[in-house]
Image: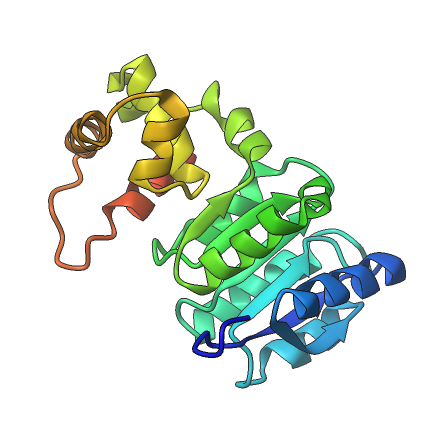
Length: 220
């Protein structure tokens, strides 16, 4: 880790002991300090009340019921600490959870399938992107949403939907251009068109990328 790079601090919630230990080691090896690692919802709620961490990395399903405790704790924490960075890990594609976390339009949220953790560099990059205020959605989560959206999103061309899909994955304009083999200028043009079709005028805080993704998750 470069000497001038700020060391991030994370709260981790995962009920599977081996995965919890593995995630802790991955984060710490990547220069991210784990200030607390818990295995159940009550402990997570207590950990999220701390003020000495920068991002929460958590499983959606935690004891005691293993339903939506992790998500509920994250949503509640973001309600009291606006913009709290949260990266959710899940075994399954559950788009509703991503929509709930994005509801504020503030960003700093991510949703990855646990299989993605096997790619250490991708996982660490996602943690840093979310901690920095970005939005990262697993490509499989994005793919699950493509065919289900209606309303103003029907105005988008096939290429614009591809661009919006990549925006939802947290990719920059340059990365989108590289993925689609088009110029940066072409990507700028597509994004401008997307904003117009989704009725998202220029805003001082330039958060239209998050709002565009949120509009998509909400079905327009």
